[in-house]
Length: 134
Image 1 (cartoon, helix red, strand yellow):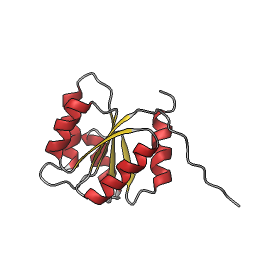
Image 2 (cartoon, rainbow, N blue to C red; image 1 turned 30 degrees about the vertical axis):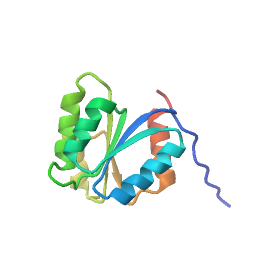
Image 3 (cartoon, rainbow, N blue to C red; image 1 turned 180 degrees about the vertical axis):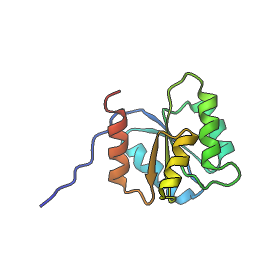
C-alpha cells in the first residue's frame, strides 16, 4: 500500500505570485499555499501581475499562458526584464501541453513548465523541490 505524504513547506514565508484568469482556481490554490505558510498574491492578467510583482517582489511566479491581454509568454519576458538582478523563478502552469508549448515557454523566460490540471500534492512537491536547497 502506497502512502502519500505532503512535504512540509520548503521555505515558510516564500513569496508566490499566482497569475490566472480563472479566479476560483487561483483563489483555491492561494488558500492551499497560505495554509503551508507561503505568502501569496494573485493576479488575473499580465498588467496586474507586473504591478503586483513590482511591489510584492515574489520569489516564485506561477502563471497561466492563456491570459487576457498580455499572454503568459509576454508576461514572462516582462517579469525577467523588470526583475533585473533579483532572482525570480517562473513556472508556466498551463493546459497547453504540447512539446512546442514547452519550448516556447522556456524560450520566453519560464524556468519550469507544469501542465494543468495540477494536483495539490504535485504543486507542493514542486515548490519543495525548487526551494528546499535555498
